[in-house]
Length: 197
Image 1: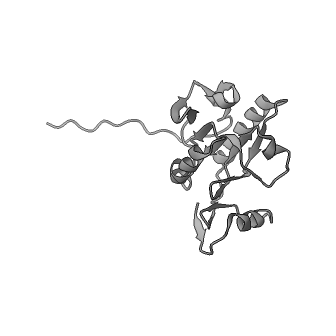
Image 2 (image 1 turned 180 degrees about the vertical axis):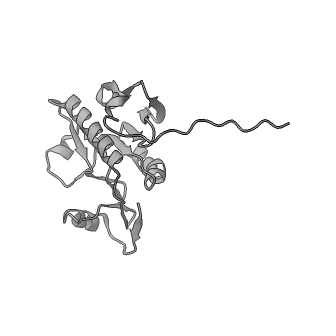
Image 3 (image 1 turned 30 degrees about the vertical axis):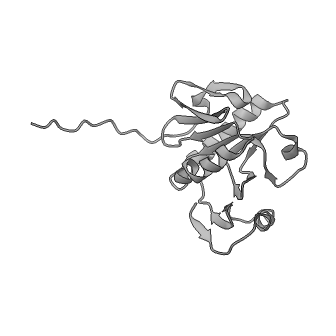
């Protein structure tokens, strides 16, 4: 997020603005609207790859995979990079927003990571329909999965060479499929501090 608009809006007012297809993407939190920064090439590729493999997996199921669709929850409207909903209320009513996703995925970027791990995370884990929240790094091959386990949330991470498991949709796939054609920055070697003498 890069900028906040100072005029207070209701959720209904924001959703009416959202339907006008503004040339800028916005999110809404507790009455205030925030402009979103544009994504990088890596961000776009990771989002596209993730959507494609999940969409293919869910083909023929009652679930739908959506990209950059408004998610309305608890006084906020977010634009997750990828969502999966299996709730007929989201799919059949042809709304401009979703309310009952079971899986939410965000591709991390420098301008959004703090919010994705902070206030968005807190809103997402309070949404009863969300079973998994996934964070994907665009600087290193790393996928983090937060999964609901009854009243608590568990955490798993996946790195290069591992298979990512999304239990909410019964899907296991190599992490490399998310990063197809993505050029990751070189990783700096771990440097030991000089010994004290």
